[in-house]
Length: 336
Image 1 (cartoon, one colour):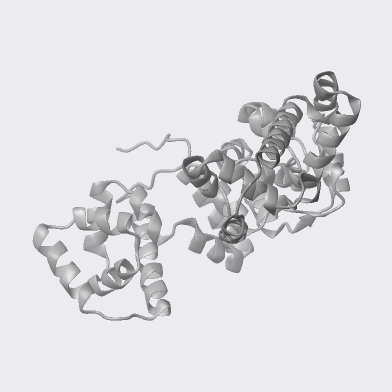
Image 2: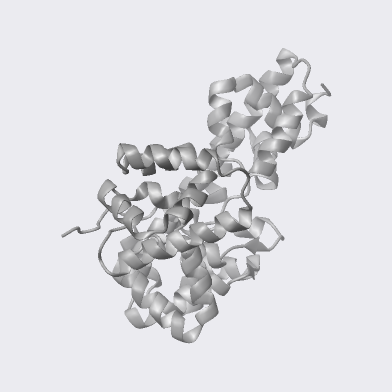
């Protein structure tokens, strides 16, 4: 291995995971993208031997950056720098902050994500819809969903539309919004544009709101932006989400959908999905399904996706008619 100063970020990450051991590394992998996992695994596989001093240096650097990240989330860059200077001296504190801002940039509105949704709502509800959309797109989906549900009904669809159509926002604009919110967030540390919003963002937000709010927003978007509304609906509930339904709902879905669609959908489904669906069939029906699936042979992915789409449409229809309940963010669904 090269000397510590010449190590790349990937090499340091590989050494860190090797040092942490397989159990902890496996937990870290759960939070990475497929591309990151592939790159990191390749880097780990190329490591023959890690010298003890390199391991100690990387672990020490990771610990310092983790501390800095925590200090920043508590009180901003200024607070973090003050604490680090007291602990490590001025020069080392600057080095730690530089490493942190170069590799682990603080996500905008981090402080707001730690705040109570009602507090955030009180502060932003009088702002322009675009400003509200920007803030909500950076919060956790469930938190954003709670806030969106509490906003005036006439604003909800407009804000959802703005989140869905939001593209890149310059750090200058983000910085201005943060100053208005009086939050010490370090979005101005990078000159890169920050990607936020988009359809998936509004889908995650809508998954966190109550059914009534979701229906109001989607009905309004159906009129204003029908194509956008349709795309959002497609992503609101996917076939694999069937595991969140209770047993009675799954049994109702099984009775509702075409058996051939269900066989196609289960053909490539995860073991968890298969298990919960078969559990809600009679023993004879489950055995028949399994036998028929074994003799199906290869199936086209397009056919599977179309079958799953039809089942998802059936599930959403059953929810709309009140025959089943889909658990939503916050756990506040009322079943009668």
